[in-house]
Image 1 (cartoon, helix red, strand yellow):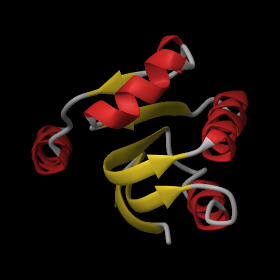
Image 2 (spheres, one colour):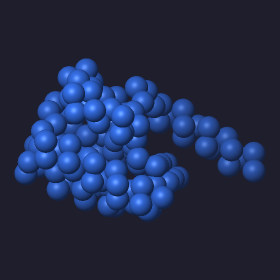
Image 3 (cartoon, helix red, strand yellow):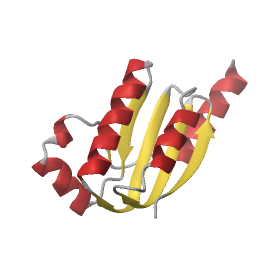
Image 4 (cartoon, helix red, strand yellow):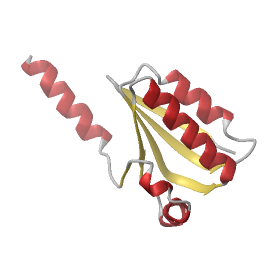
Length: 118
């Protein structure tokens, strides 16, 4: 079962995924990305994702295309080694932007400082 925990900061939607991105379990992800479509950046944290099947990869590609078409920056975060290998084998590592770290708390503090300074 796939769970999605959403954190929002101004124009950033961080979706922390937990479980499997597989056939029959992707609707919750699709819905969460649609709800975050008012953001400038959508970041999927995959640190707690255990499996991605072919359908799941297709959903990730579809979500990427939909968000980019709306002018939203789409990024994957904390791709673990097994998932990273899947992205390499399918050559999707050349399609998706991935980062190994994103400090949400630091980002919040920096944005708050910018608001105070303005």
